[in-house]
Length: 189
Ligand SMILES: Cc1cc2nc3c(=O)[nH]c(=O)nc-3n(C[C@H](O)[C@H](O)[C@H](O)COP(=O)(O)O)c2cc1C
Image (cartoon, rainbow, N blue to C red; front, side, top):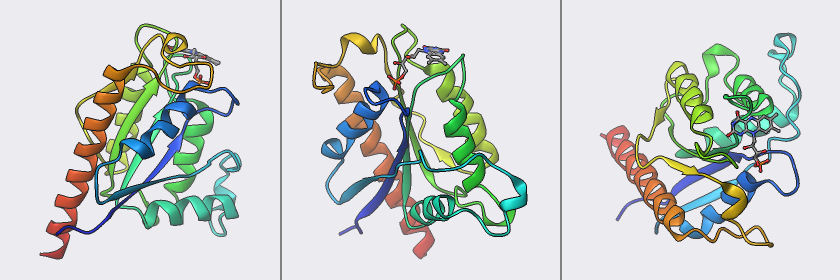
């Protein structure tokens, strides 16, 4: 019997009718057995300032604590101008500091994106992968979850109506939890 795997999810966008937030909120119901997903709201995280690293602002401390106490992370994000939205990159930058307390180190990470375009936010994901290389995280490679033409994939209540996408999401979450479980077993040895 394996321990329960705790996953923290964040990202989305700040707008009320965000497809990415809607995608994130589909995920708790798609989690495998023996795992749980808690969603963390990063909208309160202030703009990064290295002067504040000695005594981090409370929202940053809370975000770091949530990451530290998780076995794995899920990031669901839009693509802005071919890259990572500024507020998301800012939150990751803050939580990665100070450098000797990088809470992303050795955390498995799953990425998802939704976009109104036909590429589904892929470029934001590839830039995020690069960021997580520096942070020493383990980004799950496959399946890649890109919800393309997002304006056609959600109903009026912002529920995802694309069963193919749901299948890929479920598989990615399964792979994330399996990897986190394997890592926990290795750490116990
Ligand atoms: C500032 C900005 C830049 C954008 N740049 C891109 C882009 O580079 N690639 C893309 O696929 N969509 C881009 N979009 C369109 C987003 O995919 C679309 O607005 C999407 O709905 C945003 O995600 P959300 O619904 O979660 O807010 C951009 C939107 C904004 C507001």
